[in-house]
Length: 408
Image (cartoon, rainbow, N blue to C red):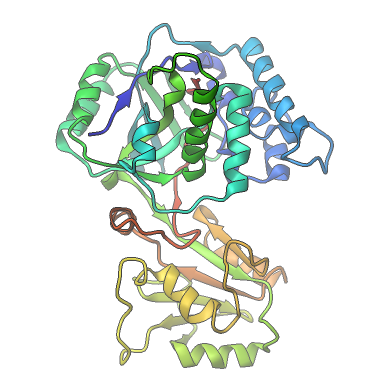
């Protein structure tokens, strides 16, 4: 049973929506966020990445940054203005990128269901990132960016969605990156609440740290509360819930900055002991258990030797795990992909041209182009209670922060 909770969204007026809506805080660094928001005082990046309005070099986890987030949020509420809807509501959010289209339900979900694994996970969280977003949430008393959830598609929910989107939209704009964002107010939220009661599990697709932060914030607010009932808004967290069959996962590629003391010829020779290698390969792998490697101005195709047994197990058989276990760790000594500074990741639309640019420009020495992980992989790993390797999935298109805010 999935608990769906309507909420009074704090949101911008129609004529400010495009200016306010910003990319998620964790897909841009400080410099990129500053460049995006420098000429736009209404950009929500001033709230989600407030260090952009402080001197360069400011510690992004300092008290000054969180105070600036609260100050910028109050200023945006007043100047934009952001105003709450009069009654608790649900919303639909459509994303269109090229030929791809997906429509999700914007709702609050239960922190209890998250804590009890009825909302399933596939990723470990980093304590520092959870601490950061928890502090941000508590200072703002709001959840400003949604957690991206999915579920196994159900025709009865699809039918209700199709009925809703024939009405007039609240927002409909195309962002500077070409992605179209359309939001509808749901006129009859009870139908959605009832329909989702038959959904056994929701799954986090993207946003594990935001979800964990909502749980952590709830624990702190509950301790401070007198007469806690379980109905307080802090018991729920902001989400957009998409059916699994509509989601699009793009490759999450790898680049490495040095070869652990090996020459390029020595490195290539060791790779050939673990993989079948062909020269002048396509930069994009054609299927699972194929990888493309860019080294010294040339693309190589890698595949598993046919005489060897294939890896067994939900996680073991993932391409991101195989390249780690057969190459990055044994050949380059990269054991912890979260912390090893020799390894970096290139996801989404940047594609193989970005890999070539990094290697040809001397910022990396070798790059690996991967076949994308599938949504079925994600669901199976989550159902098994296992954990995917870091940086296994890159979802596109991305939701925008600041359009629909949940105050707690």
